[in-house]
Image (cartoon, rainbow, N blue to C red; front, side, top):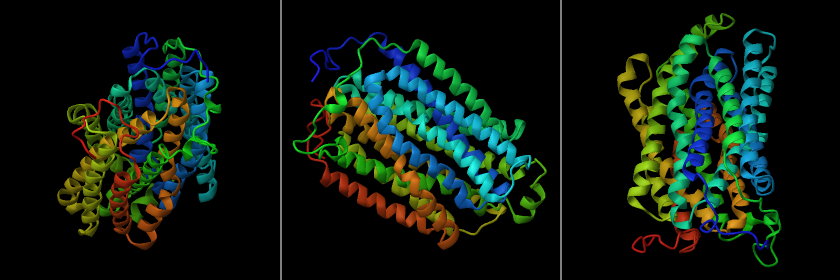
Length: 455
């Protein structure tokens, strides 16, 4: 192994806090854009264009597949090319993806592209650019932080930069609601593209990186007679948990806008038929006005978890993963209850508070669980492998979204609306049990972790 490689504790850390803030805002741009698409743009857009619900999820599914395949590549490249360059490339790819998505959606609205599958193909292929290239930003950012933190502070610092993504999901729905109602349903895409392009330039120009790349990281042997970091008994449990969590949150996020549409009867067939080709997209405006505050509540809960609860409680990473399943299960149960209530616009004062409360618990659970497995996987490997493991973690974060249209939206639309949330609750119980038994004591933990926390 390269003798010049130093540990994160001994290496110089120039202007660390301002660098972390720059990454914080870069991830915030991604979080804002993604949540705008999920909460206020794609579901009502596909409904207004007459596409089936599963196509809305499949647009994100194809992107998630590309994301999962590409993230390990970008994590490894950040070892050799540098964290700054890969993070900037990721933001640039995200900017291009949003611009292409805007063009594809505009072509569909203008009837330059017609037919359900043609429209779907244009939207999905535009989004895959984010999966293929935009996936570089997150592993490079996480590895950058891991390079510059000691084991004892890694959990809180990773939670800090990922809270930038969470802040974006707070700003995104509110911003989208304003943009959609004033500038049209496509405006969030082009504005996000511009912001991401600016952040790409700022990262490349101003993110300090004074270390030589880790050229030999990809050749490090992890386990005797076994090749592949993901197969390490120290890393694999964190990746399995991450995939499961992405499946759980993907189902709840993608189905949620359709619950709002269907339970509150926001887009009856006669309204959709009247809006097609008119450019008014009344469905989109109505949905944005209700899903925006709900996703803002969830994102604020994530921020509370990551910036308040985690530093205050100082739990082990394994414990965060287990405890995070509890509020997520409560959120799934509340969504299940909402689906059992009578539908109708006059039910908004009964159903909508339940939906808001569900999003709050979902946010608390995500905010606890995600830093748990991200920090745990980082601490389970050597400093030379931070880019590699960050790529694997980010890849696992997207894998669940590959199949959520089939386990979430398809079940919701064609089998039983409450069924996805019964499945989610069962999976969360299994995840907590798995984390308890599969992660060996002390693996993925800082030496200074509270010894009184026995989980």
